[in-house]
Length: 149
Image 1 (cartoon, helix red, strand yellow):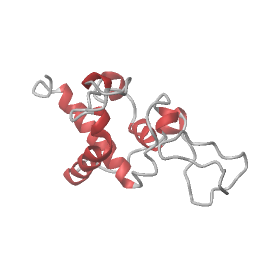
Image 2 (cartoon, rainbow, N blue to C red):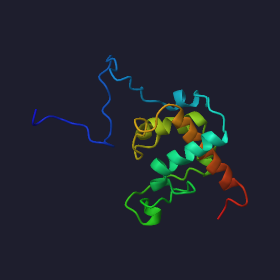
Image 3 (cartoon, helix red, strand yellow):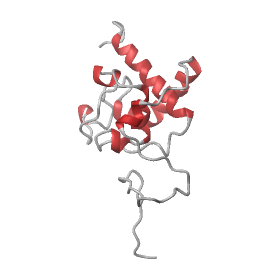
């Protein structure tokens, strides 16, 4: 037992052996096709957006920045060690479906080009959709004339 393999937090997940049944109820990794079929069941109420803001500030702001521009304190844009942090408010991400953003939260390394850690074990259930709703609010703010810098 002293010399066994272990999984470190934020490590690349190891795919389960084909045919295994999850014991903990883990979700399967998503693909682009399955993600685009997901529909957001949460309406963009102020409650959902405020809860999404709390989650964003807890998990996402450090990389993506306060306005979602990819300029968080640890991104290379802001002088930090991590390169390639995507802007969440550019047209490419804004054109993606809510299901795609949800899938990036759940399976970041599969959907997020292998750079983003998996947050599916940290952000669960309806909280993921609240986070999607808040990202959509950031995108709407970036499009408005007062939201641009």
